[in-house]
Length: 185
Image 1 (cartoon, rainbow, N blue to C red):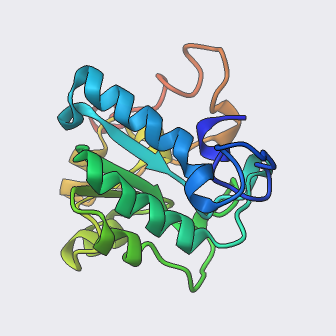
Image 2: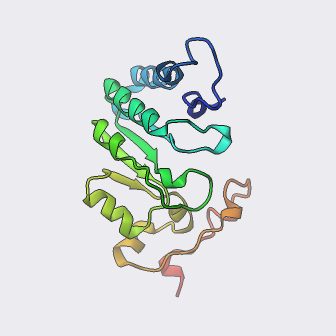
């Protein structure tokens, strides 16, 4: 069981101090945050959470309550950032529209709030402009576009990513072979 699975009630069936209530299920992640913060300083610690994700058999019956609890609990440690994945990325794959939102967590967390989950140039800029996030993470787009900030600045076309090359052991295919703008002429 990984750290992200501990808080989720559909997979954590423990009956000890790390199971049962939401507080108990979140205990392990918060103990890790505390230990790492004490070891290296909270200003060097961040945590990524996917309360809405249901992959790896780790669904949660009330993901908004989970995300909100964790956002509020993390404030105690004064960590550098909280990075959450949008509910629209509930399963591995492309985004879908949904009514759930990270806004309650954004309002609850007092530090830097980073969002991820299928953002493009326009909706990423809009999320920051509307104060829905301090920063936006671009995973797949960055993999396929090593010069992504430059492309966003110029509103240049983006390389399409090839999901079949993600997380493979080949050091050349997929991660290092996408062209830069300068080499696309």
